[in-house]
Each structure stands twice: as structure tokens, then as C-alpha cells.
Amino acid sequence: MRSAASGAYRAPRSTTCSTISTIAVQVAGIDHVGLGSDFDGVFDLPAGLEDVTRLPWITYGLYRRGYTEADIQKILGGNLLRVLAEVERVAARLQATEAGSGSD
Image (cartoon, rainbow, N blue to C red):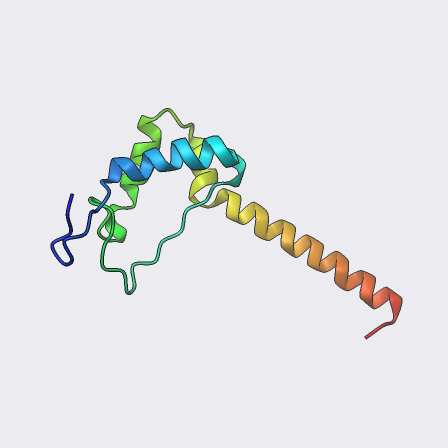
């Protein structure tokens, strides 16, 4: 599919879900995949994902591919929250270690 703005190829929404399934999940594993979005300053987006109102189609596409609700929640933010919680835990441990050593 071609973009009206630039004439460049635009991957269809189904390709986005396929990429998540085949590349990200199979290579990295379900616990290491996360999605983010930034529509500011972007001119060519995948067909069917032109704006934030289309993001639920990713959820639907993953569901249709047989992903469980738990796996979809991981992809759509659960993994990120898990990583951030671990970062906070490690930061707190390091700060406690530094405070206990008396060094500045």
C-alpha cells in the first residue's frame, strides 16, 4: 500500500501484527517484547494504524493469532512495567549500598 503523502510503501496493519509475532516474539520471547507509539512528526505509518484510535486493532490482531490475554498484556505494557519495577529495585539497592559505605 502506498502513502498518499509521499508515495512510499506502507505496511498493512496485518504486517505489523505478523512482525510482532514472527520476529519479536519468536526471537526475543514473549517476556521481552513491548510496543510504544509516537505519532508526532511521523508521515508514513502502517496502513490501518494512522492514529492512536487504531491501536486496538493490534490487540485484536494478536488475539486472532492465538495470543492469550496475559501475553497481550505483557506486549502492551506489562513487560515495560516489570522492567521499570526491576530498575527501581536495583536503584534502591545501589543507593542503600552507597549510603552504607559512607562514600559520596
